[in-house]
Amino acid sequence: MSIRMSTTPSKRFDEKTNDMRRRPTVKPSGDPNHIYITRKTNVESQTKTAEELLNNAFDEVFIHGMGASVNKALVFAMEVERKFGGSVKSDIQTSTVQCTDDIVSLLDLDQSETRHRSVSAVHVHLYRASS
Image: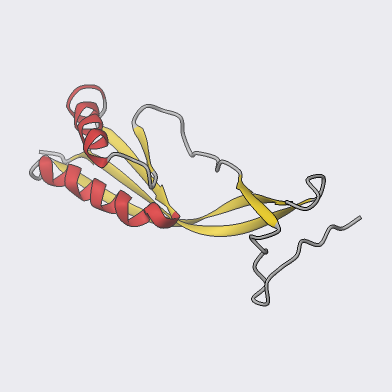
């Protein structure tokens, strides 16, 4: 049985009669030297974390951002690189991440539909430059 959610004329789901619940995306790594930037990330505290990782524990740090946070992740990475005055270099890669949303009818909570969407992502590899 297929459930059809009500949509607006532009084929978007109708926010008046449906609720979208975004599923968490799969993170490439859970290692402590991987930093994930979101809209809610406090960049100042994460900059200190990245500096501590590069100074003490790791020779490399990976920074990830997707969707609305791509620009914030790039600015964050460049700020960390700038603070190390040339002793840290970066490689930047872009990708597309597949995300899944559950759309639940507000009129009948037993009705739901799954929607898949593609989101742009950025992955920055910061590493110690060779002397």
